[in-house]
Image 1 (cartoon, rainbow, N blue to C red):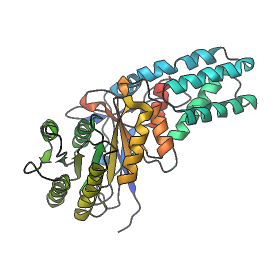
Image 2 (image 1 turned 60 degrees about the horizontal axis):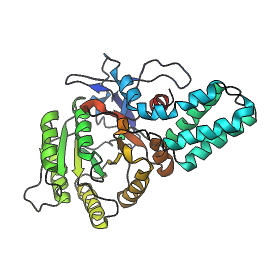
Image 3 (image 1 turned 45 degrees about the vertical axis):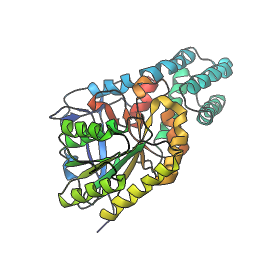
Image 4 (image 1 turned 180 degrees about the horizontal axis):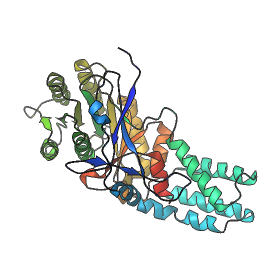
Length: 366
């Protein structure tokens, strides 16, 4: 079977029980205006997930507002940049860049990335490439966008070509892991995908109940542990086997929240990964790490450890609507080379948004 992939896409926006649509943000150098953006899933040549290629006519512009308003606190931190550049002149370059550097640091872009951005701007200013405040701002946005839209940084889900596609959701306690899984199920289900949930969090007493509520809410089937001492790997293995036998498109696997320093629990993730791989070759297709946006740069050690143990394929950054530290999105991509797949910009079921680097840059540097 050929291995070249065909990209299928479906709209990635506000989801009602009957439709799903998304409108993206304006071009990098343009004024604020809506444009259509698509949430893509990568599929193989066998036509897997062809139903996800169905495009739905857009009916609302609410997603632009969601992404834009979701980063309001970060945008407030960075608003000083517009003030600095409004009456910029060459003689004040050092002062302006120093204050710009401070604004980026406060928003958790991180020292390494901040210095790189500022020094690049300084070089372009002194060489005469940038001659106005508006040109400096455009260069700033382009610099950040380059970091986020790296070559080989695949922000769309990579779902392969075998049924079922298996997605493992991992992370520390309290990051929004189970909720993110439920919202992802909602998005996929409303695109016509047959989704099976697996309650692999066998440590937290209420985890299975919480996921069952999400299953009922989204109209998905669920596999839960049998008995109090069931192992997570057993639950996930059973779910993937059922998914394979009953023709499910996607199996979403919840796992127990764990500190990245708890090595025995981290080893359990390896067992889970191996278990699903025995049922479907190449599974899991995605291992998504959920990180709390409120932790800012403190998420980096977590991400490094999880990546070393199980090999993270993508990130879900949650609770960004309540954080002024949106720069951490850039830091985690640049430092770890792991793409952000989804961002949480609100509490509603449709507020888990596929990550669009250009939309993000325009939302924080309005």
